[in-house]
Amino acid sequence: MKPHGPIPPGFAADADGMLLIGGQRADELADIAGDTPLFVYDGAMLTARVAAWRAAMPAEVQLHYAMKANPYAPLLAHMAALVDGLDVASGGELAMALGSGMAAAHISFAGPGKRDREIEAAIEAGATLNLESAGEAGRALAIGERLGIAPRLAVRVNPDFDLKGSGMKMGGGAKPFGVDAAEVPALVRRLLAMGADWQGFHIFAGSQALDADAISDTQAQTVALAARLANEIGATPPLVNLGGGMGVPYFPGDMAVDVAAVGAALGETLAARDPVLGSSSFAMELGRWLVAGAGVYLTRVVDRKTSHGETFLVTDGGLHHQLAASGNFGTVIRRNYPIAIASRFGAEPAETVSVVGCLCTPLDRLGDQVALPRGDVGDLVAIFQAGAYGATASPSAFLGQGPAGEMLV
Image (cartoon, rainbow, N blue to C red):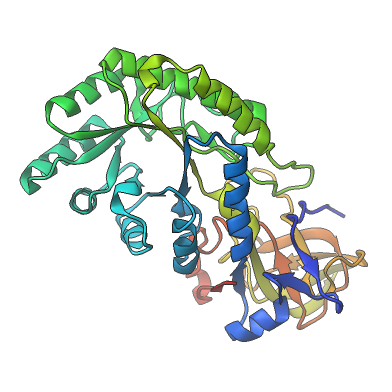
């Protein structure tokens, strides 16, 4: 038997033992959707998550939502009304962000390999481009001159450090992301000389970290780096985007980030910052931490079988919707995501089973020899921490199965 990750707080069952999401029964939500598999996102949990972040962080720090975590339109509109800015990573995301109700001036566009038409769309809209290279800067300046618009440009910095313990390291050493720190001052001076509307720095060292001390240390290094660069440039950056980094507990033994400790340390760091950053604004850019816990992936058991003494619950979902839960999205050793039988939520385990999807590949496994209450044909299986990097980070076209439904409640 292999354990599963911790089910996020805030979920409960009704008197019949059925999982409630947003106060509604999981089976009734599946009926409303008309079919499974289905992603359900709890709007109240999203609102509470933002409120918890604001309560913990210094008041001067802005909150940006990195919409790559989940761009589902109703969820995006919900988040746009709660946060101070949106961070996008493609022209498609830019269009969705502009349609969410967020003002273009509060949208930033990062990511290597921006095409000229994407750069042009951002400049025309008035969004900020986080430049990833000197070459991209040259293209943005040329496009701005052709359009007769001073482009809003920030520089994404590839720092000389990374976020210790992070699941994905975005800084330190040779990286496709950002401009090496040593080259930043000359580039910013060029932007200023060319009349660009310089918006500051974007410094993102890593993501999916659970250690508050490591996150706080990285933020302190980030603020110090921003000050050093500003002094070399001789100008104060209007905004320093500190990146994100705060992860969520997916696996057995994972503990939630102590967000209060991160906020307290950041407050101390900003209070002691170099005077060159005295009038700078600061932001954190979070995606997964804001939305993962509010999402549940519901998939229905379509077969129950035994092979060589092992019981399998075969579902109508799988890795084509939940690639990360199957262990095929950046993990080296497969571990079980939080998982439950929705109709017996909170009941004691009765058997050890493997929960597999409908795809014709041994990679399609949502729960590996996990202890659960009995699951029968027709029961719903719930995969938690499904609000981030689920539907749009999975190969929904694989084997022609098609996308899952989505719903905000």
